Amino acid sequence: MVLVFAESPRGQFKKAAFEAVTFGKKLADQMGTSCAAIVLGAAQNAGELGRYGAARVLQVSADALNQIDSQVYAQVLAEAAKQLGASVVVLSHTSTGKTIAGRLAVRLDAGLVSGVNALPNAGGAALRVKKSVFSGKAIAEFDITSAVKVVSLMGNAVRPDASGNPVSAEALSIAPPAARVKVKEVKTQEGTVPLPEAEVVVSAGRGMKEPGNWGIVEDLASVLGATTACSRPVADSHWRPHHEHVGQTGIAIRPNLYIAIGISGAIQHLAGVNNSKTIVVINKDPEAPFFKAADYGVVGDLFEVVPKLTEAVKKFKAQQ
Amino acid sequence: MKLLVCISQTPDTTAKISFSADGKEFNAAGVQFIMNPYDEWYALVRACELKEALGGTVVVLNVGPAANDKTIRKALAIGADEAVRIDADPKSAGFVAKQIAEYARNEQFDIVFFGKETIDYNGSEVGAMAAEYLDLPYVSYASKLDVNGNLATLEREIEGGIEVLEVNTPFVLSAAKGMAEQRIPNMRGIMAANTKPLKVVPAVPYQENVVAAQFTLPPPKAGVKLVQPDQMDELVRLLHEEAKVI
Image 1 (cartoon, rainbow over the protein chains, first blue to last red):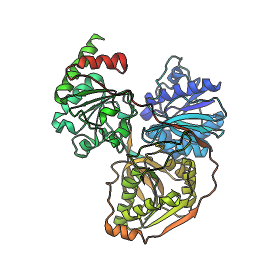
Image 2 (cartoon, chains in turn orange, blue):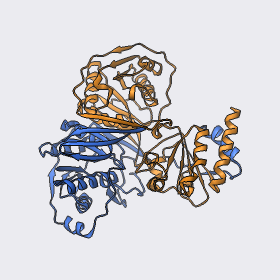
Image 3 (cartoon, each protein chain N blue to C red):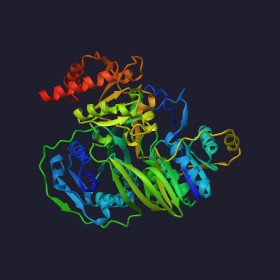
């Protein structure tokens, strides 16, 4: 069977969990087996994971699981995988999944491929999985040859499919060990979709000239329901907060739509955004290297183009 | 403090990536290699800063062939005190993690540093695997680290926020932006690096369970479709009807 760890940060499932269960269900179908989801700690409506294809939803409840310690989580997940006889364990390639996946693979003596971005081919004895490598400059396929396999799924790689029915969550009793990492505080940025999860991102660079000009970027993001981002020089100059910095040193993202405004497109920037499905570049310099990586381009003064684009999106949304 | 920094060697960010004709192997010909930037800028520099403030030793460790010695010497020039190279041509994250753990097991390091991921295979796997082999706590994507006695306080980037964590040494971490600033080695450091010890140790056996089967280059972009600046309705139409992203 395929066991999917469905993350519930602060008690709530997010898109990553629905994507992982959808992926697990499709993989289980290929393998001619069933998909179960496992939830650690508190979660509202765990049975809802049935809609995404989990035939069973198992929940391990314990206070120790309401904060994430990689050792605790890996140990409980490994124990669950053994009890349930899982042959593949699926995690999300998130801050949580990245912390756990390697540990879990070692515990299960399993081969691990992280950041898988397409449905695997489960035809042979090995599981063949695909991922983006060399910061988006190549695609690799790996065969996982161990008896038990662990994969983590890249965000925005699979569209959640909620065509199934909810199930009743079953309690699974596994006693977690004591945590050795203590979470003292979580500072959250409320109000926007975090960049790694965002489907539309509006990003701006030095072409904005000064931080006071960001209103037009925020307006465009707002009509698109997008998250705002920025290039490295902008973050380094403290024009925008560091958590908005996308690129090789900042956050790597893969939205459906990335709109780059006044960003020249240095290779270090592209390394963090070139897995975006569609890229729109707005720049007054027709020689900006970003146009080579773009699907759509507008050569023009961003201070004129961006407000016009915002108006056009507004008009389009009003017609929908 | 005794600090271990695990460094990887990767193709330079700007390197053109290509593969053998059958797509089975990375083509290293003509490629310039560098220290993985996250290992260098964040993990190594922060470890050196801590040593300079609190005293102790920074050991750098690389799993790789003799050709990597140049990268290892650079780490010594930046400020590490000694180096270990585990002599092998690694084929997987699991192999590297196993080698690191076997070396570190009896060395009583207070903190084992990794970069958040390598810029070649982008796996973010080795740190967590090594931590499990060593049965040590692991904090990934740490953007801040302070140490007071045997208590470390860290910040860690999560989706939509920051976690503040406490953990006692010994532990393992992976370092992300914010941890430290890039440090350019000075002439004194470069000279000193040549005389610092670099120990070469043999690899231990490891049963591979992930095999690279095929590499391909992404399909070339169809080419940018330019839209006139006064035609934003047309751009929205294309994004809706052609790209289907809004």
